[in-house]
Length: 204
Image 1: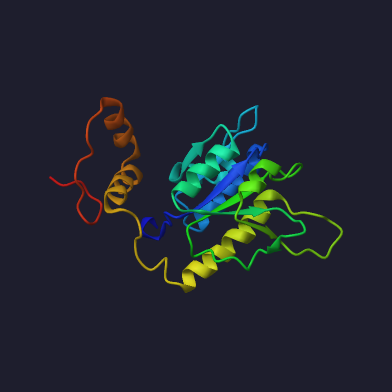
Image 2: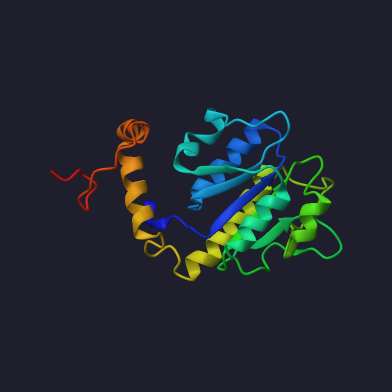
C-alpha cells in the first residue's frame, strides 16, 4: 500500500463546509493512493467524520492553508498543475487533462464552487458531463470520478508499479504506520525513530 502512494497527486479543497463530504473525500483519496491533502477550511472549521472516512484520515497528512491563493502558489512552486472542477464556458471534459503530470485537483464547496480568485490561478478547468435535471454532483462523488480517471491514467503509465516516494520519507512513513503509538511517544520526546528491517520489524 505504501509503495503505491503517489507523492505528486493531491487534492485542494476550498471551503468545503460539510464534515461528511470532507471525510468521504479523504476516503476517495486513500483509495487512489494519495499521500497528502490540502485544505482551505471554512470559517467554522472542518473536522473528519470518522465513520464516513473509514479511518483513512490517519493515513494522510492534511495541510491547512489560510487562503486558496496561498495554497495554489505553494503547489505551483512544487511543480503541480492546478485542475479546477468548475463547469463553464472554457471547461473541458474531465477525462482530457494529463493526470500523469504532478497534479492538484481543486474542488470547491457544493453551494459556491471554486472561488473566482482560485479559478484565475488554475491551469485547467474541467467539467463532468451530465444529461439529467441536476446541475452538479455531490462534491465527494465528483472528486471520486476525477480521481479515478487520474488513477486509470497513472496505472496505465506504470506509476503504481513501484515506490515513487523519497527513500527517507518512505522509511519514516513505514515506521509511523507500523508503530503509531511508539511514533507519537518518540516525536513527543524528540527522539529518532529506530531502524527497520525490510519486512517492517524493528532492528535489534
